Length: 94
Image 1 (cartoon, rainbow, N blue to C red):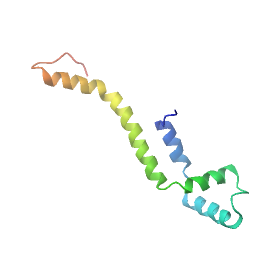
Image 2 (image 1 turned 135 degrees about the vertical axis):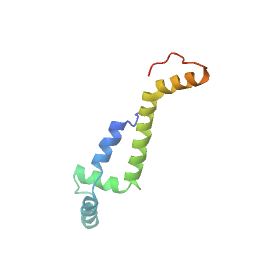
Image 3 (image 1 turned 90 degrees about the horizontal axis):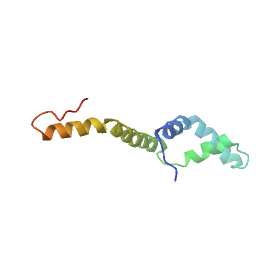
Image 4 (image 1 turned 45 degrees about the vertical axis):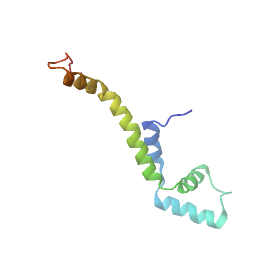
């Protein structure tokens, strides 16, 4: 099973076609179908079929970033939790 990482989400966001690219490919598909499309145009055509693509990618970016940030601050959270349950410092160093 592949995992959607922050790097992959960033790459996908950078590859999201612009509206004019969607329009150009859609005109071509309407006239001639998908038979004569190159790989890049096929990609644009497929991406257009994904509802709310940009919003979904933004959501995945927040989700993957949150996991990374929670891992980074986990030690500090543990220290604060220990310190708050004792009358004096638990010897944690931040």
